[in-house]
Amino acid sequence: MEPQKGYWRVVWRRFRRHRLAYAGLLFFAALLFLAAVGPYLLPYQLDQVSLAERMHGPSLRHWFGTDELGRDIWVRIMHGGRVSLTVGLIVGLSTVLIGGVVGIIAGYVGGMLDNFLMRVVDVIYTIPRIVLLLVLSKLAGPGLFNIIVILVALEWTNAARLARGAVLSYREQEFVLAAQCLGASRGRVMLRHLLPNSLAPLIVAATLDAGAAIRAETTLSFLGLGIQPPTPSWGNLLTNASTNIFIAPLQVFLPGMFIFIALMSFNLLGDAFRDALDPRLTSGRR
Image (cartoon, rainbow, N blue to C red; front, side, top):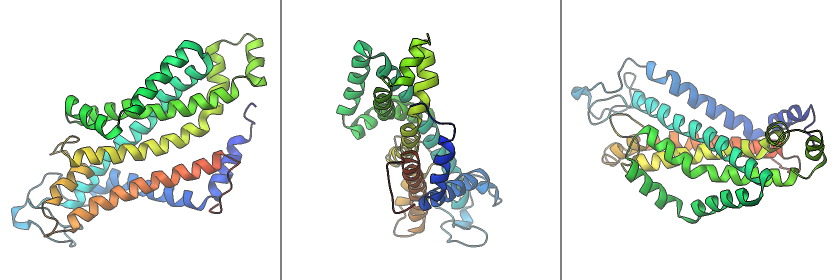
């Protein structure tokens, strides 16, 4: 049925009652704030070297200490957060946009087009994701743009399946048939009627894809196939710090902690959106 006028108001009310939603929003907002202003809270440049202050522990001068070249770890982690969060947000939004369009078209048009698009999705799913990710990263080369393109190319399939499933459940219902009888074009039916009804699974998919993208980017950067120095990301900061893990374990713990917080915030938001958008779900955490 057509979304009621107060549907999103009800969704927002259920979302606010979800206790984990506040935790996810708090962590996510804190990460965005720190990535935006964090590098400017201390008077150091990203690659400012100070050999006289090599491997110093946390202090008032250097809140997270310094690395093997005397560079401030706080500033580098905050800059790394910009890169990793940018990858997550762009990939999350792009995969839902591309996958949602493909899934809605496949589910509504059907026939040979639906069969072809879903076989493409099946082929991508068949290949082990980590193997395909490593091969494509090696072929395309390191860099922020290449990482984003590769992750979008691999992750859109989940949103396509979700959108197609939603459309298949709606396309024979009365409001779609009525729009067709009134002469609405295919594009109008998909945009005006099917897309709003498919938003619920796509919003959840966006949060989960964003977390998966951050996890994939940090993995590739840690292996040397992602973001390359001197540009910091949480992944390559872990690579640099791993050589000093027994001398300065805090250098490994801190980037890992921020990765954990980012993934947890997206997962909590995804869980809260899922419960809020699906009234059939009853969770004791609300």
